[in-house]
Image (tube, rainbow, N blue to C red; front, side, top):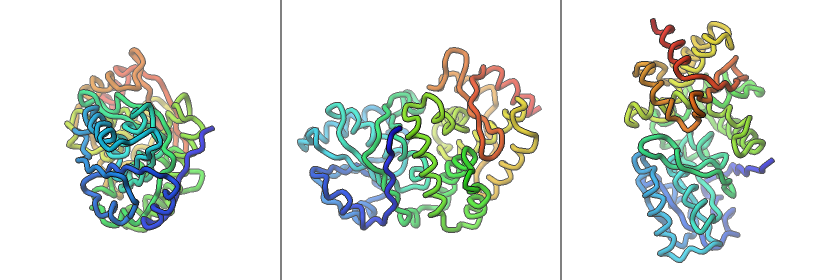
Amino acid sequence: MVDIKIIRCSVQDVAGKLAAYGSIFIVYDRNVRSVVRALGVPAAASLEIEATERNKVLSTVEDICRWLMRHDAGRDAFLLGVGGGVTTDIAGFAASVYKRGIRFGFVPTTLLAQVDAAIGGKDGVNLDSYKNMIGAIRQPEMTFICPEVLETLPAGHLAAGGAELLKTFIIDDSGSWYDRAVESLEKHGDLTEFIGAAAGIKAGIAGRDPYERGERRLLNLGHTFAHAIEKLSDESITHGQAVAMGIILAAKLAEKKGIAKTGLAEKLEADFKRCALPTECPFPIKDLGEAMKKDKKAEGAAVHFVIPERIGHVVTMDLDVDEVTGLLTQDND
C-alpha cells in the first residue's frame, strides 16, 4: 500500500506547506501565470512551457532536465508542476528521471488534472502520436487541490474534466456521487465536494495498486477507445471529450457481451449529453480498431478493456480487437 498525499487547500496556503523544501523549481503552463504568481512560492528558478499534446514528448523532458542542470539543481531539488494534465505528466516524468529521481509535487489547475491526471504517480510522454508510450510510475510528494483555480476555466474545459469525474463515479459509486455529480455539472454548480470525492477514490485505488497489476486497471474505463480517438483526430479532440465517447463505446460493448443490462449505454449517453459531453465517435469502428492494436495496453492480439457492468461497478476483460470492432460495427448497422 502506497500513501498518496492529497492536500486540499487554498492557493495562498501552498507556499507555507512547501516551506520545508529548500530548493524549489517550478515548471508551469504558460496559461496559468496568474496562478503561479498567486502561489507566492519562493523558487530557485521557474520555467514556462507550452503545455500541448504535441509538446508532450521526450524532447520537452530533455529541455526541462537541461534547464535544471543550468540552474544547478541537485538531488535535493524539488520540482513543482503547475498546470493541467499535460504539464503534470511532463513535469512528473522529468522529475522521475533527472539525476535518477528528485522530489516533486503538483498544483493541478484543471478539473481533469485535479480528479485524475495529477494523482497516482503515472507520468509519461507520447511517442509518434501514441499516448503515454514512454513514462514512469513514481509518486509525487503531494498534490495540492485548490478549487478556486477552476473559476477562470472556460466552460469547455470544465465539461471535458467532467468526463473523468463521472468516470470515477461509474467505477466506484459507494458514496452515491454519480447522479448528484451529473446534476451539478448540468447546472454548473459547485464541484468542490465531488472533486474531493473523486480524488480520494483515485488515490485509494492507485495506493492499493500503484503499478497497475490489478485494481488500478479499472481507472482506464473508456481509455482504450479514447486514446485511439485522440490519435485519429490528430489531437483535435481533447482527452476529456475522447474519454466521454470511449465510455459510451465501452458501455455498448458491455451490453453486446452480456455484461451489462440493455439500457446502460442509453442512460450514460443521456447523462453525458446533459453535461455537454460528446457521445458520438466521429470515426469508423474499423479505424479505431487499427489504432487500438497499437495501444500500450495491448498484449499480443488481446487488448485490456474496462467495461461497465452497472454504475458503480466495472470489470476488466482481455479481448481481441477484431471481435470488439465486429460487435460494435453490428451496433451501428
